[in-house]
Image (cartoon, rainbow, N blue to C red; front, side, top):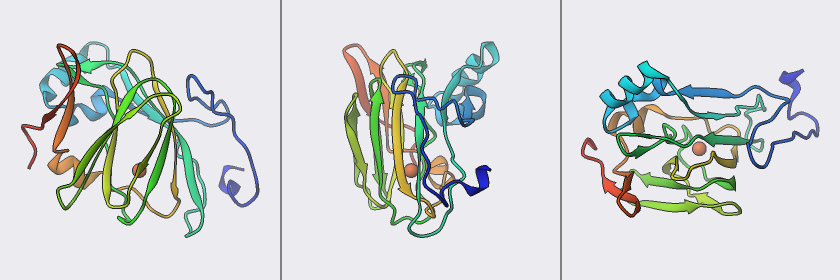
Length: 192
Ligand SMILES: [Fe+2]
């Protein structure tokens, strides 16, 4: 039945607070899966050995991946930190680099950090009701700076694919960490 999704009109329910969809199963990223994305990976590994929290989950709906089809779902980044760095997604470019994407924040508080290959970057705030447009060519990562789940609804062209490798190798230029007066954007010491 799932294979037919998107060939006909359909609807799904995403809870506005939790972001969860009871009709589908999500993809989950535990801290042990992504320890290497933090500026202090050793601290991430040590925490993962203790209680290995769920850092984020999202829906990958089996929609057709032809030009003209749209891919959508929700992403939930849970609250927490590793050595002062907020829980976040791995971040990605799209395999078709010329892909824009929109994220609409349903619940929680966070940031969307973006950067392109030409050196431009931006960091925009998420609060309930905020829609962030990620322009084509920009890697993007969601960061939870609050104490509740950060829930966003996303939509992009279904044939775009994901390139996690490029941004994982060089890292994002900037990180969002907890400072004495709240979130701070700092240069990534490991950026290459
Ligand atoms: Fe994306």
